[in-house]
Structures are given as C-alpha cells and as structure tokens.
Image (cartoon, rainbow, N blue to C red):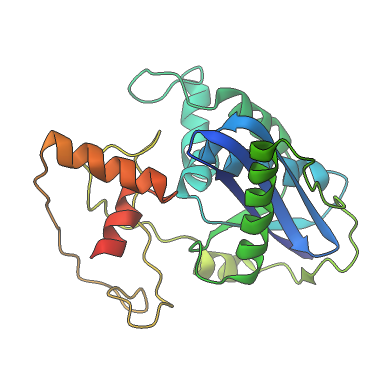
Length: 245
C-alpha cells in the first residue's frame, strides 16, 4: 500500500518568517516554522517531518512536492555530496546541511517516491500543504500561535495500491535539458520541468520532443532583477522565465 502526502514550505520575504507543512487530509497534517528562514528550508523541513511522522509505518510513501531543489537534492545529489564529505561539485559546503543530514538519516530503509507537481495551479493536496505552510509563516510574522495540526492520525488517510515497477518507471520524473544553464538560481541550478497537463501548454511530454535551445543575453543588472523577481515569486529562475514566455 502507498500513502500519498504533499509537502510544502513558505517564506515571507525569503528569507523571512518561514513555515512548513505536510498534508494527507484535513484530519492528518502537521505544520511549523521559524521566525527567520528560507523557502528551501521550509520545503526540506516539510519532507523531513513527513518521514518522521510516518517512521512507525511499513508503507510506501508517495510525496508530492513542487520544489525541484528538494527532489533533486534527495534523489540525485545527496549520494555524491556524502562521498565528498557533504561538499558540492565545486567544493563549496552543501546548503542547509543540517536539514540534509537529518533527511539522509530519516530516509534510511524507507520506501518512498517523489512526484513533482506544479505549485499554485489548484492541485488539491499541494494547495492544502501550501496554505498551512504560509499560515505558519504568517503566524511567526505576527508572533501568534502556530496552527500545528493534528499530526499523523491515520484517520481518513488515503491509501492506494503500491505502484508496480512498470508504473513507477512510467510516472518517474522527466528531466529536460537545461535551457538557462548560465543563470544562477537560489542555492542550486535545476532543469525546468514542463507540465504536459496544462491547457494550451507550449510543451508536451506525450511524444518524444524536438528540443530547441533558447539563449538570453542579459546585463548584470538585468540578471540581478530577474533573480530577485523569481525569488519574490517563490520560484526558480527557469520557472519564472517560462511563465514570462
């Protein structure tokens, strides 16, 4: 059996008052945060707390997450970081190291699968987690009690049959070529993911695509404004540019 849950984070100002939340249903969710943190910290902490809340269960965990940074950190980059003494490829220390190491310990021996979902488009579980994470951040901003939720109750938790190996391969993430490899994004560069289910989407993953490379020439000031606007929108530079296109 598989438990499906969404995990999300929020930071007002990024950095600023920050919150995290995981959500299964209205009777099974949890949230928290800090007076000062980043959006990535909230995203990571949500995943960590979800693993901790379900550590007593012998179930597969299907995690819906709108952060490519979190998914790639856990599923792609972490093994290499550990071999290098928790250093990145350029020799610099891994960002959010304590959270990364706690997640590394929490996922040991667990059966789990991440699925990227596009944020802020009405996905029911993702929206529910996002609202609770933002509410937690706003509570810290106002110095009010944080709605922490009931935690893991199992009450009403939706369980679905575990995906077969073939199903897992069919639903695994598709990593596209980096369209903006020269642009620095917050903490890590990640490849953009295009949602094939968008009505009128420019890109489709239903068929083998023919890729076209888009090159942007930006001044230093333009680049700084672009990065700032993406951070203010709580997204990556690539996703922000895709929205502009």
